[in-house]
Image (cartoon, rainbow, N blue to C red; front, top):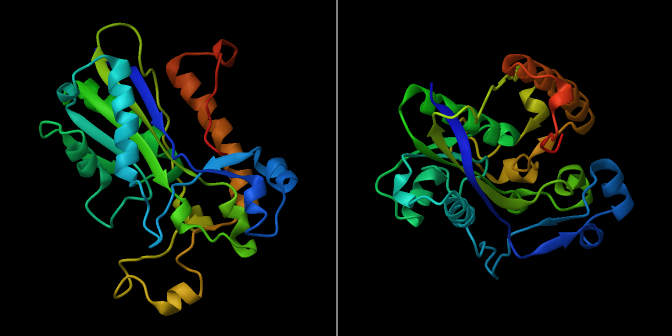
Amino acid sequence: MKHAAVIGTGFHVPDRVVTNEDLTRLMDTSDAWITERSGIKERRWVAQNADGMVVETGAEMGAQAARMAIGAAGIDKNDIDLILYATLSPDVFFPGNGVFLEDLLELNTAGAMDIRNQCTGFVYALAAADGFIRAGTARTILIVGQEIQSTGLNVTTEGRDLAVLFGDGAGAAVVQATDEDRGVIASALHSQGRFAKELMGEAPMSTHRGRIDGDIMAAGRHYPFMNGQMVFKHATRRFCEAIKEVLEKGGADIAEVDLVIPHQA
């Protein structure tokens, strides 16, 4: 059976560094308050010009990370059969960033699929890549996880619970089929939609004519919302359950684990 092995990785972050001290000039917060709750000391935010437009798009950041991953993998870029692009903040409403990345990399009509799973996007993309490779549908897959969060944050005291957490950047991995006994061993994917509104970006919305208007913006419904305490408690509990499940699926014991790489939760 074919296995999906990660053969190269890359990343890209904007040059602009935003420290906790910088945020104290925008909202009622402190370095100690942010550090105690998140461990974060600084984040990267993409620069904007005088018109408020970003100087680097999300797809361009993804391309930078992808080039690094392709170089690390030592492959020709045209070996890539498929792009799996995980983001909740695409550059435009549609199409997805995957096709913009395909164009920026000048690939030979590689397939492109966007994945909208927010924090778990890269995990879902890696599981999907494993499935495509096991099925024989693709041999070499480029996975990109990328976000531009800063342009959609409420950087005031009212929005500080979210604004202090999120930054901008991109990561990439090249995943390739191998007959060797290595690669993705097991995945565990779950969701609980009844809690979806506890962490949500509501607008723009296709259920509303025009997708957004002045009333929606005046009410702040275009900013992301998070019930922080509930999300933290729920995520940490479920995260431990998922780790236990995937270890059981993979036939491994927790004592064998040398490294755990979690997302923010």
